[in-house]
Amino acid sequence: MKTIDELLKEVKNVHFIGIGGAGMCPLAEILISLGYHVSGSDNNDTETFRRVEKEGAKVFLGQKKENISPDTQLVIYTNAILAGNEELEYAKANFPCFERAELLGAVSRVFSNCIGVFGTHGKTTTTSMITEALLDAGLDPSAVIGGKLPRIDAYGRVGKSQNFVCESCEFNNTFLHMNPDMAVVLNVDEDHLDFFGNLENIKKSFRKFCENTTRTIIYNGDDENTVDMLKGI
Image (cartoon, rainbow, N blue to C red; front, side, top):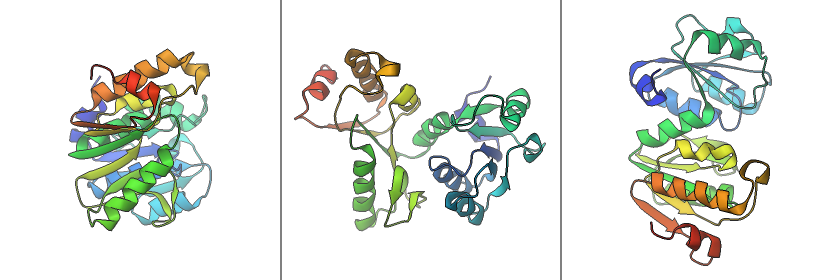
């Protein structure tokens, strides 16, 4: 099976299941800006659902298999979709399907200056601050943020530069799909222990993210766990 990076170089028609989600909408907008034909569905008629429609996506309220056009070449879904969802089950049986985190990883490789912000605490705040700074500097960044940034009244934006700022979530190791050019390490602490089990496993995942980074690591030297995690890199 082809990777999502390979498919994105070949396809033009992408369908999002859960397109109104805060993490899905910005990615759909980025694909639209890159020239893809985007469609998508959601069960909730939200502000983000209508926002992506205004940007040019063909949207459907409610989730059923008929929402997916025969011309669809790639389907992106959010892990919030429950097993047994009619639209998702149909998609998986008939089209290449990838989870939202895999698309974010592929998008991180599209931009030549991807800044991935990660840590146990403070990701959304720091991603927002970096986005604000780049906007003030006139560097026109694209961004995917885990919360709504008041300045843009959205969870992300599409810029015309190669600067891309994204919040990189460690939950379920979803951030390991990414290859940022610059990693911003805030802190390392015990969290999501239902998945990681212990602090050492968290450090291993954080270290792998740093090893996936292509150019620069900026880290919090006052955080003992962060310094320990980075030894030898």
